[in-house]
Length: 541
Image (cartoon, rainbow, N blue to C red; front, side):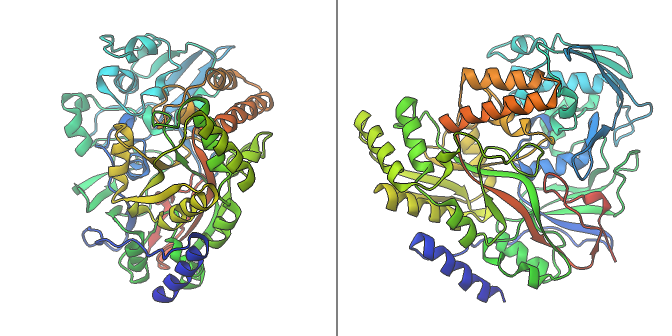
């Protein structure tokens, strides 16, 4: 069946790209034998040690989310409820929040979860000297500028005040009505006192307060991360299985074969592209195809020659209109992806709505050529528009289809460039050493359209990979964050997205579905609002 599927996928891609699109090949993953009720699950090698404030990609995120629990949590549908917090009480204009903790919460080593566990962790995440990737999440808190500026010696946010072991206050620099909604994201997790003895060592063997803890075999780099239930945990996410054995793969094709062969229980949120047409028949009783809170794009850094200023804006619009999202999603993705009309996702309330400036996301080769010619009058283009992608994520087919259509429409050189691993491409992006366009995407951190906008495009945001900066966008997104009326907030977000469609800090591609399969022996498999399995409830045998 696999060989047949591969032929079909190559034929479809060749129709679009004019070339043979072979699947990526690589070695399989590691991992020990799982127990009777231990769930083996796909993962990629985390980019960094497992520190909540320095984890902003899914390989580490899947693990951190199970090791730690925040003040609030999100249920399967994205509804918010208190977790470690007993109460979160705002003042009238949402600039101050009093937070009271539930009594008796502990970390997996038995040490107590206190107000200082949160305050110290947030200060650590915000302080410039610690260079944490999630630093920008603490930007609304008073005193952020003093601790985050380059060379800052101040390390404590003035807006955090410990009242007692179970109570602290947060003062914000501006009204932020949705601040409590964000507090279930892993960056706001608590840390035990022992973490600060050696944070790098802690990241290799973290101690959390979530439903799982690291097992005896822990994290074997590039092979597996083994989790077992945390016997100290008391909360709504108590595990029903005996643990999660995350197997680290460099090829989704290999992972799919392992599920077929009974060597792996859970895939990623999607199957390899070559299996889109048949995974439902391969796994008739254990598959899903549902909307996910996942947005896909590619980013062209403005620092690269020809991509800054007005010239770059014209070129990004031309590129966006030079390829056919409808044709690519229909032919390659076979109903598992939907062409993007904005920068969010229809899986989140208020997302996925067409906007006034949305024509830039429509295939229009004549307009693309016109805009490209206008840019060439400013400075003739030279070189190649290449799009880098990680080979372990099954992106070759669409990257080659998109670049071939760009090449045919605009008459320029354009290629998909394979980078072996997600970790490697993220390191290059984070270090700003990448010299091409590159694949980007976003899985919501908290169930709000703001998660797709604030964290990616606000000036200085930790995941603003293209270093986009717009005073108008920043003003609108700050205004949206302070608006307590949800309808009015949606209108402001609408305006902010129109700014993005004018500037195109990233080129929107499509929204992904959860389109995947699993071992039919598993019970109670469900994918949540952000397309991640609800690991705690899954059992087998």
